[in-house]
Length: 402
Image 1 (tube, one colour):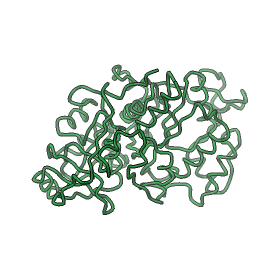
Image 2 (cartoon, rainbow, N blue to C red):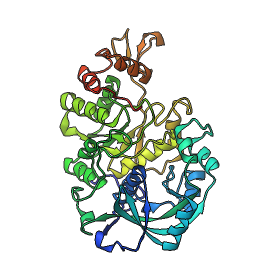
Image 3 (cartoon, rainbow, N blue to C red):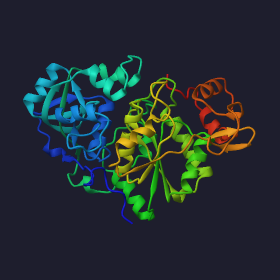
Image 4 (cartoon, rainbow, N blue to C red):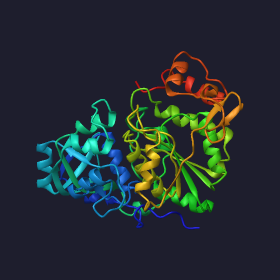
């Protein structure tokens, strides 16, 4: 059974360059860990069909229309920012080397260098101009110029990019549990080529993705198992990268999920892999972006929950559902499960479509409630969170991003 095509219908982006091709006279641009991860995502096909950072034409189209200039759905601008001096040097060089932590890991062919209206662009993407919104805040503090052009990831052997294994690639690793590389995250990291091969080898006709940046509650488990009643396979894909204060740290999320899968899931129907990118907190636009990435990993469907990729009260609870109406041409299809909660009268997990009881009988595990309980060393009730998961979380002196 053929796996769902990559976004755009072509091949996965597979952009690599032999280390011997790096000219010692290339201008070197230092980038942070977050940008390095985005470059890896471009080169390994997570962001297919992108082959590099957006040029001005594509940037304006994405910001204003939520589509590339060729009308292909794309809702989040993938950009490289630089100050005026560095941007000029890059433009004059035409070919530059990309460096992080004193390691040259990529090259870039400069297509264009352009200015952009930060506040107007950010408001269009995040649907707010509130400076307290974490995504808006980061966007408007970018440097003044954007550099567009194709990027390639440096490998020791130029043929390595055609391999189904990423073992020969130098993914960034670190002991940092948030915001940087993550050694545990790399252990479970699959490239789109690898995940697609696994899906094909399993013979799954349909695979549903579950995006998460949180530890699993029993409600999440019920939702995922409901999906397994419909789909051949479940692709659990926690996001690894910089998060906002109060979110769970990466290692906590990963170890919680590994424990859950080991104890309560049919392993032959689960693929567990990490996604290395930062949350943008762009709500509905980010829901589309999440869907596109999972299509590139080989998924046919994605679960979109209540307030998907939201933060605070910036987006209506089901804005991420409504936006899919604007993208009927997406090949991956959303699955809109209602939120599950525990009903004290029903004595089980239900949702608004199956439970007639008033809200006073609902019991849910909010992020605020969880933080308060774990900070005081208290275990949540077992019907809200598996005791094994609670113990994993409590094994960390500080499980939350500070």
